[in-house]
Structures are given as C-alpha cells and as structure tokens.
Length: 241
Picture 1 (cartoon, rainbow, N blue to C red):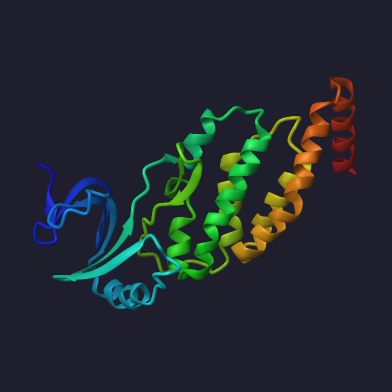
Picture 2: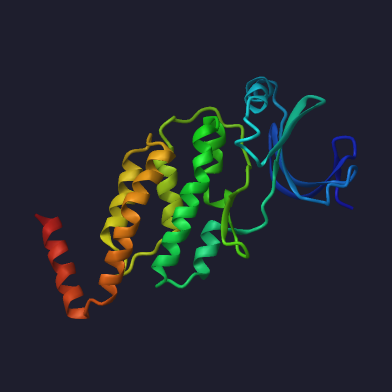
C-alpha cells in the first residue's frame, strides 16, 4: 500500500524528488474526499528553509496563483500544496509534433509564454524552479499549457535567469529547418543574452514578431531549393566577414 503522510490524511501516489531536507510528492486527499484530485506536495524540513519560505508562501496572492492550495505546518516541516496537471512534459510532447508544423509550434509558444507570465509575480525561488522543461506540461485534450509547481529550496542563484530559461523552453518547441525564419532564432538568442528580461517583456516582444514569423514561414515554404541554397551561401559568407 502507498504510504500516508500528514497523520494519514494524504496518500503518496508518486515520489517526484527526495533529497536532504526536501521532498516532493504527488498526493491525494483520502480523508475529506476532494474527488481524488492529485496535488503536488513540496515538503521543506530544514529550519532555515522553513523560516525563509513560510512567509513567502503565506504572502502568495491566491487570486493570482489559482494553482496554490495551501501551506501547512507539521512537525519540523512545512508543506506547500499546489494543484497537479496531468499532461505530457514539454520536451516529450514536441518530439511527437510534425516537424514541419511551424504554425502549430508558434501557437504553443504563445500559450507557453502567456502561462509563464504568472511567474513574473512569483518570488524568484518559485520562478527559478518552475521555468524548467520537466515542470511545463501540455494538456493534450484541451491543448493548454500548464505549470506543475515542483519548487526546490534554492536560494543561491543569480537574479538574471528568466531570459535564459525562457530561451531553453522555446528551444524545446522549435526545430531548425529551412522553413523556420531566422528571426525566431534571433529572438531566442536575444532572450538568452538578456537574462534579466521580464517574462512580460518577452511575451510582448513575441506578440510583436509572431505574425511576421508566420508570414516569413509561408514565404519560405514556397522557396525553390536552388534559391534556398543560394540564400544559405550568402548567409555563411556574411558571417565569415
């Protein structure tokens, strides 16, 4: 039988992570019958982490962070509970998407950036942990993007990380081929260089270029192979200068 935690109120369905002072479990409520909706339990056990993270979780705006359920105190630990989204991890999902379907990938990129906007309003330790390919899932039936809040107790990191992490997420979506506009890779490259850029700014710039990228993609699909090879040669010569 799967183990029970918090005085037998919750059953552990899956262990996401276990390390010294931190555990992350997928759980269901077996006492109050919440229709067995799965929840992510982030359990912090080190005294310094409890002192640091408890007020930050208490201050989360529940109207903004609709996935946040509660923070609970236990014996020598605190537990931050979030809703769980059953879906396909970002990188795995796009291994199955038609490589040539650039328009579909752009649509998901828009959904990804829009969903990640909430992390601009989150404490940096939440954003840093959640802006990872394994924590972003695609809900296949609804075609939505969701975040699973698996929040490691990291405090020692640079505050300049959002642009770099967004670039990594977008690189999971797109593949390089002759029909993908160079402007996309320029946008992703600029994100990586501007590590401290806010997600709001990144999303705003994406909306500005999205339609142009789609137009350029449709144009490239009509490009004959000799014209493509000549264009590539000119680009290589330009880079060598």
